[in-house]
Length: 112
Image (cartoon, rainbow, N blue to C red; front, side, top):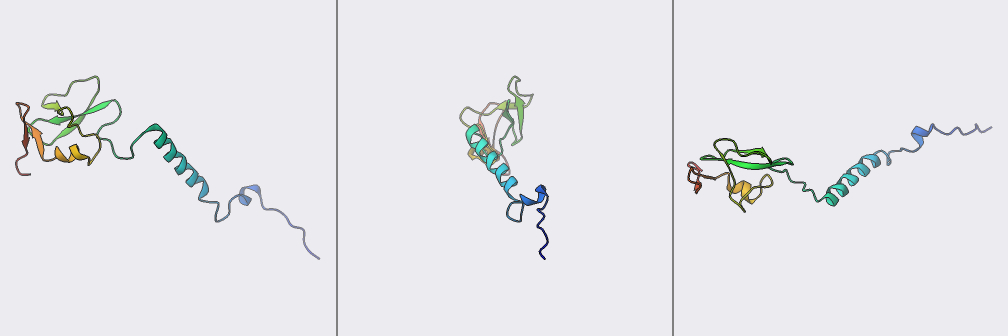
């Protein structure tokens, strides 16, 4: 005589070997859509929101300053149109080998 079939508990019936990755895939897909809709970049930003980058006079040093503050002593704003926005972008790479002198002129860094 056949034994009656007893269904598995609900927590096991909805996830088999193929179903285990679905929640993670759905979460990742949703995050990608949100980033695309928000216009965010997946590159690392030089500074966080509400901040701007500043350059250390005479060296390749850089820092981030709150939008409502002036650069600290020894730092200046990057020249207009030459501001790095993302790690490794054109201007981030450029300012690794250049700086501004005390007169505001762009100069190469000695030893670069």
